[in-house]
Image 1 (cartoon, rainbow over the protein chains, first blue to last red):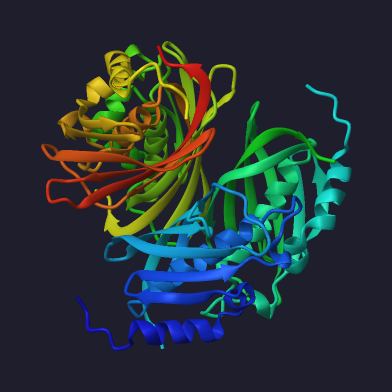
Image 2: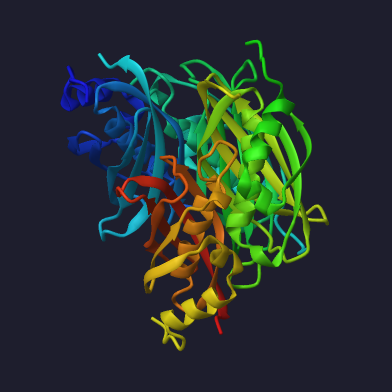
Length: 140
Length: 140
Length: 140
Length: 140
C-alpha cells in the first residue's frame, strides 16, 4: 500500500538493540518478515515462579516480544492495545521454547496476531493473542 | 467452607521464598489477605522494550504475581488458566508502580481476579483480568 | 474537554430507536449517563441453548448493548474493537437480569468498560470487558 | 482415549433440537466432527444494532454456538468458561456468513477453540477464542 523506506530487518535491528528485557529473556530471533516472527529462548532458574514452574509473566513476555517484532515489521510504530494468553502446560528449567507470531488480521489501524509457544515435544505451552494499534510515526 | 490449615501469610511466605522471577522484578507485597494482594515495584532500565517504554511483559508479570498471590491465599494450589491485559499508558524508568489484585468472583473451581496497575499520579497503566483454577492440592 | 452538542439521552434515543436486536432481547435501560448504562431484561424460552441454560450469546449481547450505549454516550460514534466475557453461573427462563456497564478507562481514542450481569439474588452470572474505539464521526 | 458411546452426530442432533436461540439465528451446520464445526447463517434486519451494522452479540452468539457444538462433540457435557472476540469488519443485512470452529488445544479438562467468521468475500469479520471446561457428565 505505502512504500516502506525501512526494511523489516532494519526495524528488527533497531528494536533488538534497545530491548533490554528481551535481552534479559535471552530471546533469539530465528525467522522474521512482514507480520511474522519466530524466536526461541531457554528457561532459566530466574524465570521460575513460587511453585517451581515457569512464571506466566515470562511466557507472556516472550510472546509479547514476538508480537511486537511482527507488528512493527512494516516500519510504522505499532503499540499493543491488549492481549490475552492461555497457559496450557507447565514448563521447567532448561527447556528450549519456540515462539511463533503469525498475523491473523491487518486492517488500517488494527492488527491481530496469534502467538504460539511450544516445547521441545512440539506441545503447546502458551497461546497468546494480541491487538496492535498502528500509529502514524515512522520507526527510525 | 473448609477449615484452612495454612494461613494466607504462610502461603505468601512459601511463594515469595521460591519465586525467583518476582524477586527479579523487585516486587514488594504491601497488603495481603484472602483473595487480595497489593504490591509495588520500581521500573528499571532492564525492564525497557525496544521503544524506550516498559516492556508489556513486565506489566503483565507483576500483575500475574499479584493475581497468583491472591488466588493461592486460601491454601489450595491454584493455577492460571488464562488472563487478559490492556495497556493504557506508557511507563518509564524510575517510576514506582502500585499493583492491586481484587477477587471479582470465587466459585467452586474457578476464580476471577481484576488487577489494576497505577503510576505515582494514580493513573491506570495496565488492567489485567485473570482466570484461576483451584486444584485439590494443599499448599505446603 | 470538547463541547458536546448532542446529549447522552439523545444518543440513547437514537440508538434504541434503531437497535432491532436489543429490542428483540427486550432490554430496558433503567439508568444512563456519560460512560454509564444500567439495563435489565427477562430471560425467555427463545434465549435457551442446547442444554436448557441461557445461550452465552444472549448474555454477551445484552452486555455488549450496555457497553455500546455507555461508550457512545459522549456523542462520538464509538465501535467495539474486542471484548471478553466470563460465564460464572447458569441462568434459566423467567429470570430477570441486571446489566451494569461502568467505564474503567477513557483515553483519547480508546475506552475500556466493565459490564456485570447479575441475577435476582445479586449473584454474578457474566462478567464482560469491552474495548471501545472512538471515531471522529459525530452521532446524529 | 475413552470409548465414546454417543457419536458426534448424535450430540449435534440433541443440541440442535433444544437450542432455541441458535434456531432463531438461523444457524445451519454444514460440517461437523470431533472438535470441529462449520456453520452458516444469513443476516436479517432483526440482527442489526443502533448504527445499522450487525449487533456484536449476534456475531458472538453464532461463533459461541459453533464453539459449543465443537467442544461437546466428544459426548461429555462441556461448558464455556470464558471467551473473547475481535470485530474486524462491519456486516450488513442480507450477507451470508461462514463460521468455522477449530480445536486449538485439548487437555484433560480444558479445551481452547478458535472460531473465525467470514463474509462472502472470505474477509474476516469476527475472530472468537473460547475456553471450554469438560464436566464428567455424559450427554444423553
